[in-house]
Image (cartoon, rainbow, N blue to C red; front, side, top):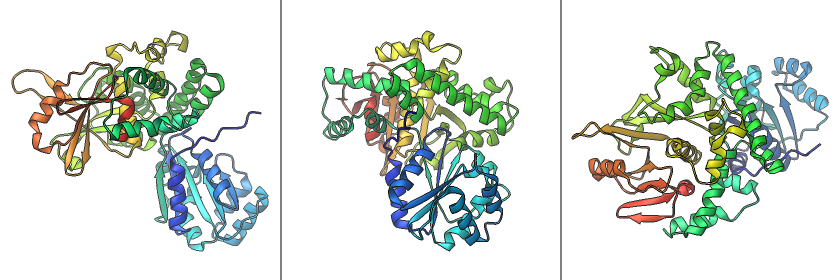
Length: 446
């Protein structure tokens, strides 16, 4: 049996910071979408950072463990039982107990308050999708939790998985020095980046690529993950509205509309989508970008939450979902992306990956649209970043096309609020008057 790969993930350092700074005064709750790698990284962390650990997987826990949880107030008995059942000795302040898929056992999560106060051991919880909220409505949510969110592998983590530990550091240095890379280097770097767009950052898909180097096999894995997500959505929303909205993301972005048009997906205007949107957001399978009505440094203060765009949290899954009705052998986007022949009408793939990279770097997503005062033309700035007391607007192009009319008009309209401005595209780093033309793979350095 092939040993499961354990990829290097940045969240490991944040988990280590929690362990060192909190010293058992809180439990760690690691949230994330299904198949994003939570259980794997948590077990790796426990193995390396503690003398011993017990992992209780509530999706497959024996009845005796569930009964022990029901009587968890008798903590000495609970600790004794789990040590016997799992055959692991626990050491005070040197061991960790992991509640994996904790949303399936709400009583275990409620008990965290008292377990943390007991202070004999550390505790890590993992939870998938929005059921971590749905399944805790009738319990007291512990305040003694440090919460971290895990996303799909970012581009640097993807390069690490491919045993490349140099590229990101070299790119960061070039970005800081505002130094062009040269056409030959850019062509290679873009081909490498397009591979990331196709494979994506779900560990199972990356592992399959490393095993087979076959994108058809990778696509099959991504389809399994997408089917799992859709099944999960149907469980929490039998009406199918959430799954329909999720599945329609590529089609909605391809329209190049100024907002996600829910009425075209659900067949009629919904009076209130708040619950459905909350479910999608909690699932961590999508990234929302909201319209900033009056773009300024305090972007959330001037946001229209009823006007939004939705992106897939993983662009590899996005590519597969965009061509769900075709087999991978018919999926021309794989060949076109790798050969840099992606047609202009598929440029929304680049917009999705920019959204993914910005989100992975800790940015909330905002955009701005407006109608020209002299014509019927609509302008749009794809992303707005708040930096210091100023804004950084971004316009995304899917090719070497370097005009930036919307960006220019936005900077005229809000000139006093603008610091740096970027056109994100697929050519080398260069300066065009006040606009920086940025290769798409340099987004993480903004």
